[in-house]
Length: 265
Image (tube, rainbow, N blue to C red; front, top):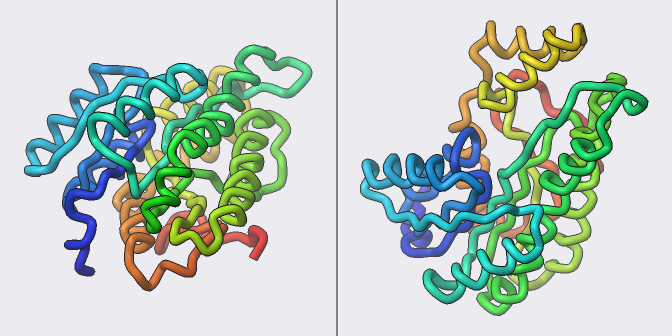
């Protein structure tokens, strides 16, 4: 294992930390000594993650916030900066899949909510911290994207896929602005993971009769899916000095179920 001693006591903010990939990333960062700020809407879920980190002898702080609400994000950032310190690691893992329907049958409120959480949320969180991170002179921003942003549209996934396409380009823009500051920004595809989102997709796909999404959900279920630890490994690798030059990239987990696809590199 690489030497991550330099991460000890660095502040890491993780959104969507109450479950799934966000929880796994939070625990992975805590294991290497980071002080992890757990951000999410559910205090109960965040408390569970905090307890898991405590079992690992790690350190965490719970800050409830709704990432698609401007005032909530600003209050969260103010609390973190005042009580914990400037983060040098920022992981945007909060996300929703939204409904599995065609555009003509979609619910506009659910469609917009998906865009707000998956794309506007990372924008608000990054904007809230990036000036302070630049002043530190070193930092890592990782936004959780999806291979859905790269594949051919399947006809029923417009909100989620579009939100991740937008997140990709936002991250590239962010990376361009951060070039030369010591802070980098990248997106990762975390793999085909059996999270609560997978459960929701499977239920909605079966309910709507969508064969494409049902086959995907069944494949993940039957294979067991990718371990969330693989996404953690990608993020930990980004913390190393060797990764200082990695900026504005779409990154893949190692030996994932889905093979790496062409993005923009």
